[in-house]
Length: 403
View (tube, rainbow, N blue to C red):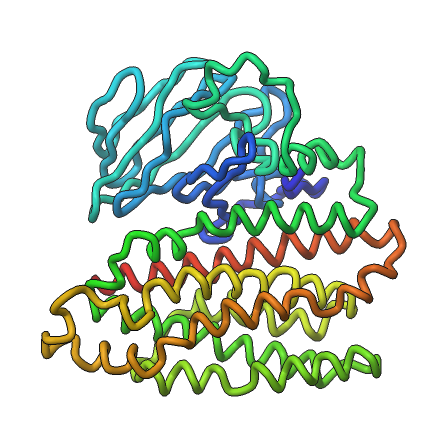
């Protein structure tokens, strides 16, 4: 269970900003990744979790879709109410219709519904349930069936690696106790990661056509690249294990200066003044002073380098020599961007290959960990993937905000 809980009572007037509630952007159901837009369950915040009563068990979550995002048709086993707080959206399913600010949708149990925005459209809503756990409160066991699965009569069948993972850790009663189980959980979270806002933006192909968006993309990516360098330098500075220190040094030599390489090859000139992106990136640097070596291996190699491998492959499809649309490089507005792409087309492909190798570093240390240590490695694995999703989603938001 990923819900944050606390026994501390709320004894004074307390406010919680929307941004303080940890978001998720997708869930895995029956081995498939389903996009949610952005969903912030109130019980993921300790103050709200303590304040909301367990008797009657109401649940609340902020939801957001924008710029062509769609939450596919699905159903829930409990009644649900969705309030359109800002913007507009199209209701899908049994009663398809446009919705605007102030509209309220009441969804009985088992009724098919979904939501879709058009490019440039944005929807902010409040999702309310009146009993039981929140729909996505436990993101590894969401209370949802998507359209393809609604007529499946074998709901109790267990198949595939993701189902095995969920079965292994339904509520903390069965705790992962082996490196293999940690690897499986990491793989499922990596699959979820490819559904975040940045991967989605890359798949749309819009960066191929819009040089201004491409410039904002590499400028925001450069923020993360600088923090990645700082993370590796901090880890090297505090490592006292001679074997790991040698491995870390080799890794650092291969990665050193890639932030400047990105800046120079793509002509990054704009400074990105985004305190949210900066804070999320800084979290990774700070962990190098707080975690033990096994936890750092999980964070840096299982999570960050796996993310880099997946991201490098997706971005290289956009930034290769053949990525510019026909005729684009004859446009004076885009000529500088095209020239830089031709010079640095291997930057992202290089990381797709190198990061695939880097994510295997340190496995020998993890293989020696006793079963009792695996749960805390799983905990940092989950947290690090959440943070990587935040980094990617903020980069995508920065790109889109400049349209």
